[in-house]
Picture (cartoon, rainbow, N blue to C red):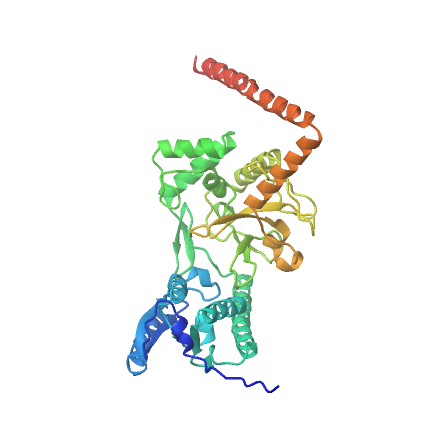
Length: 434
């Protein structure tokens, strides 16, 4: 039996676009970006906008769907580029047929981001044209070339970051001041890179150290500064205890400079951490005129470290960044199943509608994914459901659990120890006043 097959030719794939009318003109958008806000780069940004506006308008088969541009924004993380995300959203809404951009490095310098958004756009029948590489993502046969080129762009970022780090280290080794923007009590001249005492602000610094050595904590000192009308280093009226303690442990007030207090984990995320020995530090003694004597500074550090130890801050031989905390229900109670480290609570997409709370392995988030490669973030909602279900099954197996739980709750509610402590403090205060 001979079977005859009739081939039905494919129609225009663009017709599937739900918001588009059947038009011959292709709706083309351009994406531009410059990575710094220097004058030269901003001129480059304006040139890109003009170039693509004219390019699209001069093509008889195209119609301008918009120019999307991010100024002075890093290309390593897509979500930090507002216009880029607006471009993606408009493509998903069916308002754009094609995107044209200068190069892969302008589109994204993160390989995963490049492939992620190219695939997403391809699913919506939107092609991306990279001019320098001469790539059209809708017509190319595979992703191999795109993967290679985007990896090269990412490697370029990492190499540039390594060269910058090396240059900064060489400068710090020579004693050059790097990254200092000034602090309370000092005026900084960026031209000469010299530090001089600001006497008005220095009075605040001396007052903070004096009150701290007298036994007062950061919160008490902060309230006193507010009452006296002093502004914080950032010009705010509200003083927090962390701001006060930041001044207490700042070595600049004894005339020293310590550079390299923080380090960048990787150039893609640009996440910085406090340097606990992972990277070199550079200490310069007697760099400028001190505000506080070394003797008073050392006494203040002894008090600060003693109080920190009393707050259950752990400083073990491995210098693990752990702090016993009960801020959240699951704090210090969850362990990574792969490496045994605790899980910490982190908020993703804080400033967007996609905000969600996850718990992640501390080793993975602080040191890098390679130290615990199999760990993944667990949504807090999933942990809460698992806890409730576990507790339900436990109660089902042993009804006395509920009785014990209710007894603990009742004891906590009826605990009058805080009231007694408050009464003691009031009596002591009255004796001092009288």
